[in-house]
Length: 348
Ligand code: SF4
Image (cartoon, rainbow, N blue to C red):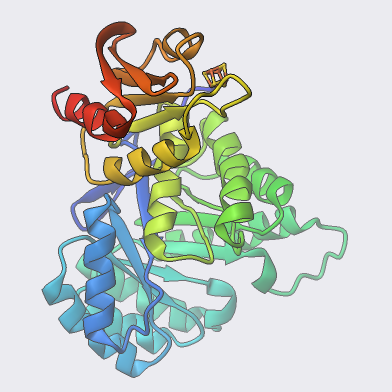
């Protein structure tokens, strides 16, 4: 893995993004922000699974006013996502949000962006310049690629904010197309010092979206690029957080909760490994410690293949071998596979 790009840190509420801080996991609520109760409930559910920053859409004044109560009733930092109307950004700042996400391409005249930047500066609230490939400002150079247009538009906004002596900046350049996204982030990484929020936009349903996101976000992280990540999925937002941590864990960038190792099963399997692995996965959701658990389909290869696990089971015909750190510690009956394994996991 390439060394991490060192960016200028910003604070979103109590969470540091950039400057070598652990890569921050964020998500976005999918409720109508005007429905305070539903939005607060979703934010709390996100917090339970380790989401560190949450973004909420602010499409109108009623949603902006709702932020006051949403802030009062929740703990994790809240970023207000604003399009088109700079006055909503001013209202969100008044409501006490911890960050703003603006798409400068659709906010309009520099004077409006200036008003927002001055108010944000006064409150010490960072602004994410969030470019999306689908909503780029017009260009007079038709030869530029989408990635180059995203970079040019972001740099223009960065220079403008800097001219106002505003440097609480984060940047994102998202596209649905993975190579475009990677090219854009790579191109901007050494052209400015600010932290990068990375992700693949409109990635899709979990089946495809997690793969697109893992490839895009994973490649960027491997290149040392990225300070905070959001996996965008057409799914409940908790799924985005689970996927984000799996990406970070698979690159050894963050530890978060258990890791499940399970064999794919094959003709040697003598038990229903798929069902057992699914049940174990469900039970592990309630466990916070970073424990590696293995579910293997046979006693021939199971213990050897899972020797990195803290606790594992190798299922045989009617009986299974439980092992810890690769060493056998018990033999259990088939109807006790799940409970016996979980008892050992609890005891680690
Ligand atoms: S652990 Fe056994 S059952 Fe599972 S894939 Fe390997 S050989 Fe097949």
